[in-house]
Length: 174
Image (cartoon, rainbow, N blue to C red):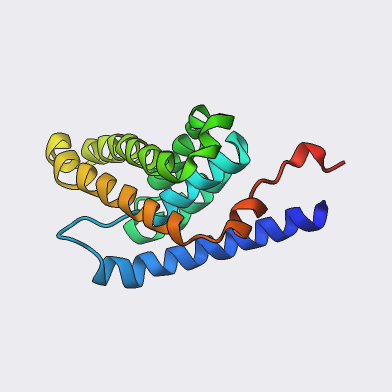
């Protein structure tokens, strides 16, 4: 079981790094529509939170947020928002949901992305002369829609072997 846990940690770390580099190179450059880009690390944080639980989602969200904070220079804001999202995604998980997860997951991504935008732009608008409503409507809602579409697309191309591999339960390790 320890070997599977270590493989899981390694695979999620590599996936997060690949998503991060895809986000800053390919997606922000070629797949952005206006100012809208999907947040791949938020999608991965939600996936980890649903599959592995509240603590794993929070920890992964914190680390993914710190990785994204390098880009904006406002250290801790993405980490805080993604930690809250990773912690709260537990409330979307039930056994019935995991059966229809392919169609349910983009809905979770959409609403969680809206909450992430409220938190992110709420804190960001306190710092400067920015209008929260304008930021949320111009960036938050389009990014949430785009992230939901990207989550569905990623889900379609994710192999079932990987999805089964992520159903790791640490309490059965010892």
